[in-house]
Amino acid sequence: MSKLKLSFSCWNYDRIQPLLDGRVQPEGIDLVGFNLPVEETFFRMLRHREFDIAEMSLSSYAVSLTRPERPFVALPVFPSRVFRHGCVYVNTASGIRTPKDLIGRKIGCPEYQMTAPVWIRGILQDEYGVPVDSVSYHTGGEEEPGRDEKLKLDLPPNIRVQPIGPAQTLSAMIADGDIDAFYTARMPSTYRAGVPGKVARLFEDYVPVEQAYYRKTRIFPIMHTVVIRRELYEQHRWVAMSLYKAFCAAQQATYRDLYVTASYAAMLPWLTANIEEARRELGDDFWPYGFAPNRATLATFLRYHQEQGLSKRRLEPEELFAPETLESFKI
Image (cartoon, rainbow, N blue to C red; front, side, top):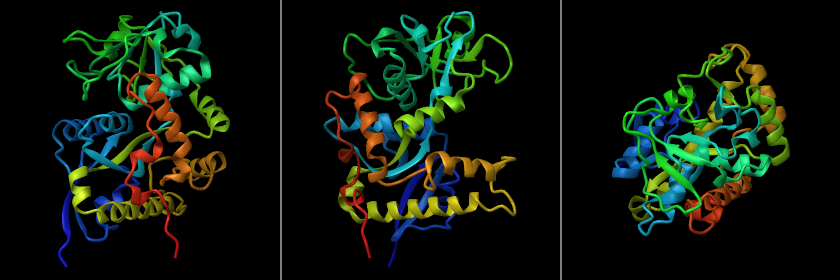
C-alpha cells in the first residue's frame, strides 16, 4: 500500500525530532519535513497555505476560525509552551517598577494578535489589574523593520494599536525610550541578562513568579498547536488520528531520552535536576498533549482572545480540534 506523501513544517524541537528523522512514522503517511523558524512557517501557512501540516500560532489559528473559509483544523498537540512573565521588558528610565506602572504607557509587540502578547496581556489583567485597553500598542519588526500583522484584524475602538515607522525596530525603540515596555516572544537584542543597561525585565527573577502562577492557576501557557489544511482533512479524515498518535509517540520518546542519566540528551549541565524539578512542580506529564488535560488552559486563552478583541465571540475549546482527537480510545 502506497503512503500519502504530506509536507510538514515545524521548528526543530526535541519532541518533534523523532518525526523529522523517521524514528516515528505516522501510519499511512510519508512526511516531507521542513525545519523552519516559527515566524516563517506561520507566514507561509497563513498567507499561502504552502504545507499540508504545520506548526501554528494558537492565536492565529483561533483568528482563522472566525473567518468564513476556516482553512485549517488542529490537533491537540502543543509543540511550544512557555511561561511568559519573563517576556515583559521595560526601558529602565521609564519608571516602570511594578505591573501597575504599565497603565497609560506605550507598549511594543511584534503583532497584536501573536500568542505570547495575548497571554501576557491576559495575565497582567487577571493577576495584576492592568486592563488590556489601559495602554497603547505599537507593532512592527523586533530586529528588522517592516513586519506586519499576518492576519487582518478588526479590533474594537477601545483597543489602540498602531504600526511603528517603516525604518524602526522595537528592539531599538525600547532601548531609546520610544516605547516604555515590550511584550515579545524573542528576547530583544538590546537586553542582556544580568547586565545593567537601558532594557530590563519587569520580573527579573521570573522563575519563582512563574512557578507561583502555575501553583495558583494550574496553567502552563500553550503557544502553538499543529494544523492540517482543512481540504486535506476532509478528503482523508483518518490523517488526523494517524498524525496525533505519531506526535504522542514522538513526545514519549523525548520524555525517555531527557531522563537518561548516563549521557545527557540536551546541553544543560543540570538536566536531570531540571527534569526532576519540572516533575515536582507540574507532574510527571509536565508537557501534556491531548484535549482533556489542556481544556482549562485553552478555555482561559480563548477568554483572553475574545476580551482582547481578537474573537467576536468566545470560542469553545472543543471547536479547535478534529473531533476524532477529542477522546481517548481504550483497548
